[in-house]
Image 1 (cartoon, rainbow, N blue to C red):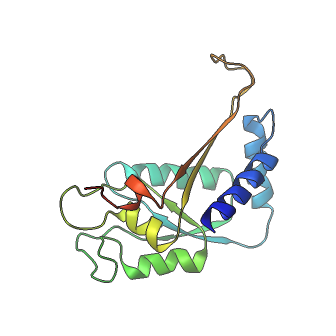
Image 2 (image 1 turned 135 degrees about the vertical axis):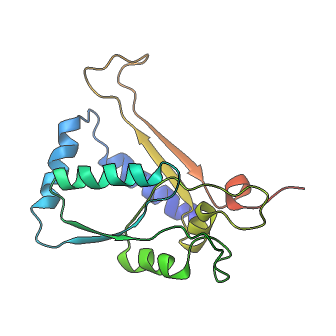
Length: 167
């Protein structure tokens, strides 16, 4: 089931990917959102470490692009929530489910602590089975290969990224 959905999403991404994307097209896309009358409500996890600084920069970009977005900020806690077995609270997960849009800053991964990482909790609870990363060549920038666009897909529900350890 998950692979079928993954194939469909990949084909949609590829069909929407412009063969020659340019930075101004992304800005005009943001402008088209800004002409909408409805405000977009999105969950924001600033994260920790450099995450809050990055989250502030992202918010500034959205303000500058005049995207009508209202951020519902949720923070990684300093205590483990027994309902999620993670530093993410159940309420923060419900925020993402309700808004259906979320943005996450970098979050530390506890190693050897016996608790689920926040990243793993988000992947499991929200069924985020694929990490899709498009990478496009921008005209005017010299690269090793010309006219090459790439989409990397990492499956998140099996193996290393699923929280399963092989013994």
